[in-house]
Amino acid sequence: MAGGPHARPAAGWMIRFGVRDTGTGMNEAARARLFQPFSQGDSSITRRFGGTGLGLAIAKQLVEVMGGTIEVESTDGKGSLFQFTVCLGKREPMSMPSAATAIGQQQRNLSDRQAIHVLLAEDNPINELMASRFLQQLGCHVEVTHDGHEAVARASAGDFDVILMDWQMPVMDGLEATAQIRRHESLKRPGMNVPVIAVTANVLRGDRERCTAAGVSDYLSKPFSKLQLKEMLARHLPDWMAAQPQVQ
Image (cartoon, rainbow, N blue to C red):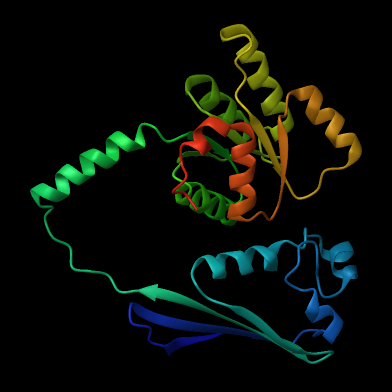
């Protein structure tokens, strides 16, 4: 693995990283689909070693969020070279906030009270990072849990506008967690169900029936873009989204 400055934009540095392996390599057809979801260079890899085929698709999203690019050079049977760039900005010296800054912060805090409150249940750190970043860019407050049991406890104790629920989590999966949240709602606030969006890499027909029975409101497939997430929020929280025309 190698890394170093690639270029120097006005606002900071463009850093390039490279990772070379001496594995099986890939042909041109495999390279063309490599950064798509559910894709690996050789489908037999999934059968032998497992994996969802989402890693490089998520890596591409992460790199693009940081203003960079990702690419691969490979020769079938001779290994591959993966390279990506990221833009890193320069930090300004820290200083004590002025009175004007303090007033501005108070105004932002007042505005924050109008933001939607999102519970994100996700055990994968990379997926958590991506979803949290998108939600924050859309002006949302985010609370994160890492298993279904914790999600039920947070949802029961908190006041959330929407819940993003990963399908597969430790301790308790998203399906059972949603069912328990719905049972709690039926006792504490009948008819006031919080939208629960199932976030999953793959939903089969039988799974949809089970999700509906458990009380899942909608589905969001991994990996998703910020636009897809925004459209999902708009579908279930139209009044809030209509009041946020400045959010892109």
